[in-house]
Every structure is written in C-alpha cells, then in structure tokens.
Image (cartoon, rainbow, N blue to C red; front, side, top):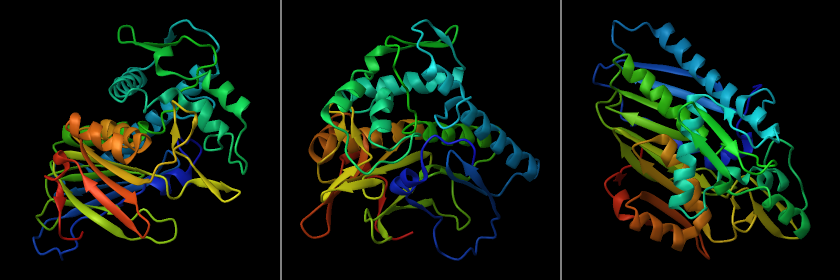
Length: 347
C-alpha cells in the first residue's frame, strides 16, 4: 500500500460490517466478488447476476484503475499526489486541478456551510498535530501554543473552488487539505457509477466501511448492512439496515485514539476548538443517496455530538443513527429519516 488517504487505525475505527443477508442462496442467482487494497484499507465489490455481455476481468481492471486514479489525486500520504502538491505549495494563486478534486472539495465546502464548520477538510494541520495524519502518532497532547498555531492555518472559508477551468485556491499560504473523511465516499460513488454504466443493476460497493448498494443480493433480498457495536475491546453487531439505491457511512471514536494521564484523546477533531471531541457520542451512521455526502455528514455529526448532531439531522432531514455511551453500555436514537432503513432482523 503505497498510497493512503487515511491510516489503518482510522479505518478500523469507522469500519462497519457489510454483509449480504445470511440466508442460504436458494435463488440460483450468481454472486461475483471483487476485492483489493486502496487508501490504506480494503475494498470489496459484490455483483449479483453479472450481465453475460460484461467481462469479469474487465470489471476488475476498471475498478482498480479508477481507485488508483483517485489515490493519485487525493492522497495525503503520497507526496506526489495532486492534493499533496497543492498542500506543499505556499502560493495563493489558482492551482489547476482535476475535475474530481474540484468536485470533492466543492462538496466538502457545502457540508462545511451546512454544519457551521463542524466538517472542515482544512483541519489537516490539527489532525497531523494530534498524531492522526501522515507525520505519525504521538503519546502526548500538544500544548496551547501548538494548537493555536495549527488552528491559524485552518478554515474552510479560506478555500475556493472554480469549476471552469477546474482549479482550487487557498487564501492562506499554510492551508492544508485532508480529504480522509470524504474521499472514500467519493470513490464508492465512482465505482458504483462505473458498474451501472456497464449495465450492472445489483451490487454492493464497500471501501473501508463506506458503502453503496443497489438492487438485491444473491438471496433475492435487499442488501443488509450491520452497524458495529462501538467498543474498543469487543466486536459485534449493534443494529442493521437495509439499503437499495442508498449509501451508508459510519464515524466513531472508539478505536483510533491515544491516552495520557488517564484521559483519552480521540482522532475526531473539532475544527472550531482544535481539540478532540469530548462528548459521549460513540458512533454515528448516516444514510444518503451519495456515499460522498454520507461520509462527510457522518464525520460532521460525530463532531457535533449526540444533541447538536441529532438536532441537525432532524432539521435537515438527514437519516442518521446515533450510538451514545451510557454509564453501563450504550443507548441509541435514530432521526426520523433513518427509520425507513432500519430492520429488526440481523444480517
């Protein structure tokens, strides 16, 4: 894995269990699987009844080519990527960018505005400072001066995009963009679109826990997706949803963190304070039409916390499921829009 957009611990943090229904396949439908590594994590694609006119090896190579292109554009772990070149430049002039990079950053800015900055891809200097980016981990919290210095280099309002000709621009020379909370979702959308262009109607695409599903699985039922119990010490299924023509992403604080003097510092950084979140929200799952939007919104809701995040989900009609730490175990609550996806049978 030479190119990464997020580290492996973060992948484990937000990973959810993506499974087709566990009933035995008695429908006679054919399941074809593709898988590999990308963005520092794994990816998988499940296709039911691959059209006879579509060559399996062609699908596989097309998926890998698309993922490689996205990596070359959006990785912060590859110093030669398009994004890394932008980040390393101190110029405040327009930077010629690919349509894909412009699309992702434009969407990120929209989500930033919607969430009053709870989601902010310019949070990179703070992510790196707290030890959750390419520079590597740390075991001691940064001091106040370090935090304020990093905060001075952030702010989505200091970022501009231009559609034609495609370009991006920073208003601060030290601005640093980290797309780890949106690029995987974008990649899921791209792969799903690629499949549909080839006439594939039944599929489940998953990259590091972000998913998009359409049609039915090999058992003639909707794709069933499990939401993981947000525990650092045990794995298990907490809830399940069914998706058809929808995307799902989960963000949480229970695996990627470090401890100092008995205090846990989560990888989820609040862009406003410059510090890890301290509320009791353990994980949040968002379901939207676009995996890119679900990816970004799950992060934003995780930053906002159980009260403010839930209020935003209700106000904006976002399908979201919140798992909150309790004195013993967890409690949960779902936004009104989420109820249509929830199922009471396990995957």
